[in-house]
Image (cartoon, rainbow, N blue to C red; front, side, top):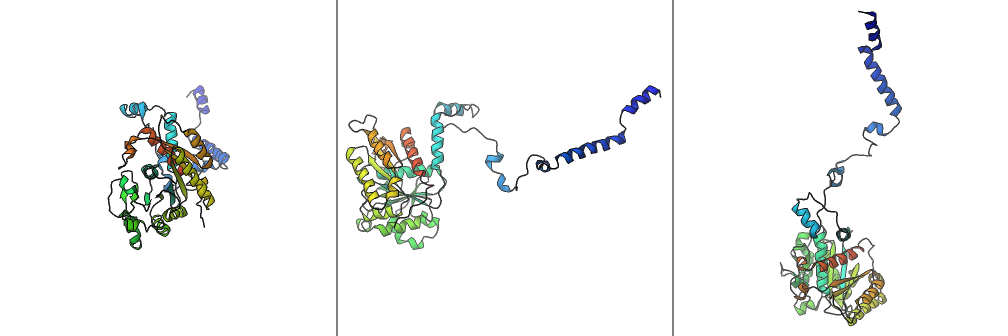
Length: 360
């Protein structure tokens, strides 16, 4: 071997020298990083504790585009098989925000009373449609109770599954221990809303008083998360008084006419003067049956009046589907009516996080 070759070999590290050099490099790197907490995890700071609860859809599934709610965006999304997803419009984003509010979690059971001082303003229909809206979007149990002792019509606005009424519910209340038992007294719509009808027999209906309403609500709140309570027109009857005593929130329903609006405002006056100030100030007012060509009455000023006295005031447009007086279905309503009901439900849901008021 030539002297030149021996000199080149002397420059190249021997095989037995490679391992000690690599080990020394790793040891130095470990010593330099041993004080860093993420060095022990290998992929970042060590979590406090890993459990099976970490496997949630939000963490472990890749995000997917949400289908648009409607319009040409929905059509394009469907035709492309979801490949082409146009960003949602401002209206769609607003709708999603409203749905998020409607889904506000409820601790225990929330009772919402629907009140009107004047008959024929759409109180029962509003109670039913709000119940449909909540039930179709929430995952818990929603029930509407007919607390009108004067031949209430709530049970006639959906297909009846049973002949049981609030009167028979009260009669058998000691035998109702589970939700399955209570379900035998309700009729359920396609939206999952359950309804307990009133009794049309006058000798029974007239006997429905404050104590009966209290007992019915005490039974139902053990099995349902949201109670929509329909009442008779006025606030002076015994049953209406019972509803007000157990209600956590109220919806004041009025037509967009001068006399109806005056009566609704007088209802707020009465609530404030009779120990229900919190119910009045947190109430949501509803102006029903607004027509595009409304003349004579300044609807804007009426709305401003109630918005200043209540949590909010929502206008529900006139809808031909609601004039029939028979079964009502959300899908049969016009889109602007459904949107108004969604806004109303969202305003009611804003009160779900407020503490319940207990009145003496």
